[in-house]
Image (cartoon, rainbow, N blue to C red; front, top):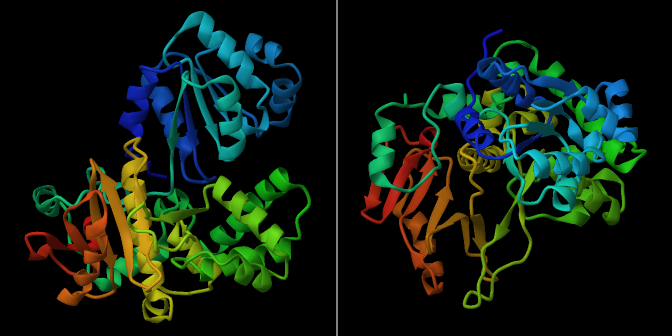
Length: 409
């Protein structure tokens, strides 16, 4: 099975050369351990590998962490460390005593538990990275860089990227980015995603929250997938899943913790006071969304009622991945006010706002960029805007507003 080079490799190695501990979080099956095992072979320092999926190692880590580190000495890779937060105080003691860069490589699939341990024990001693399913850049062997609305950088990138028509774009949306599917380790995507939901997500939900009704949880995550790209509506999710709203909130928190979903929060400031307060819901992997909604091909997906919403989800997720793969936390929002004026994405950087619309069209109309004027009253400078779409080439409405193909993100 061919290894797909991850964009985060150089970032991880650089941080490992500077920090005593690097924590790599993200959903299961996204390739965290595979990447680190490759980096272990390359560094050739005899790093110990321990996975806390192994119940014997987990029991020792939880009940006798001192003995655990007497047996498993740094440098070490601890996989699925969320199962034993008891290790973190001992990691802190070792770091404060030795100050060796790269002593601890740590992975985990349950971010909240790990962050709680980090906040209590390892603040300032550990660097945090997040890995998602494969991005377009990783799948097609392209240079990974944070997405920017810079015409010169985009034009340079366009020289190295093969264009994709609308059919291919929806093929990418449908396929998602799970490494085991992209590498052809597994060829039956329906069986893979079914197993992913029932085995991995369901197991982790049980681990975090105790008992869970599997059928209700499946209805819940399916209802969430049907609302991708929309403002969060707890009541709709609860009613569709036949659970109460408190349970719906708890399960959403778990899905966010597991790296399955994420939110874009509304952009607002003291001047723009008429904006809404609810976040928009998205999934990190659109292949999972397609599976949950039971689309059987990219053609039915492209022609279905949710084709625009899932294309938006895909584009937003690609933007997020482009930053996380470089170890950067993006400042990305959406805009909607009480007059129902909307901007799909607002990127904030260096005191400037970059408005973006995402549309299922190859020939976007100039009227689409008129809504960008609503943020002119913001105290930040409104900079370059863009429409992300299914166009076959990079172009522009004018010097301030670009037309950017989604395959170029």
